[in-house]
Length: 157
Image (tube, rainbow, N blue to C red; front, side):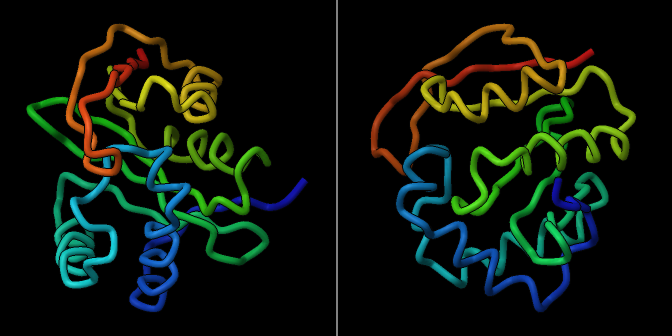
């Protein structure tokens, strides 16, 4: 099994993370993305905000020492949520599950929430494997699909 680890996001990670978050198939699957995944200025501003916010835990996900994605927790409307983005080349290899298990050790807050497009079965499996349960759904606008789609809301603890 490969060695998946979390570490602080470094300046040198930003180009690779931007590239990963622009992959059309990944963007389509994630659905709830920035308005324009190709807007580097918006990406840099967003990452700067995340990296300096006291309410955010942001980590780079590495496998065998190589950057392969990012994972974070953040507070929105009083609830702490988790989110992650794993390079499509690593999908289905347990990377997201291992990274999420490690993040859950860093984030003591419970309950903890997550959201995923209801048709993103891979992400829903990762979250459920970690103990999250689906508590409901809502219809929300997904910029990547330019449409209203069903989003699953999940809760841990």
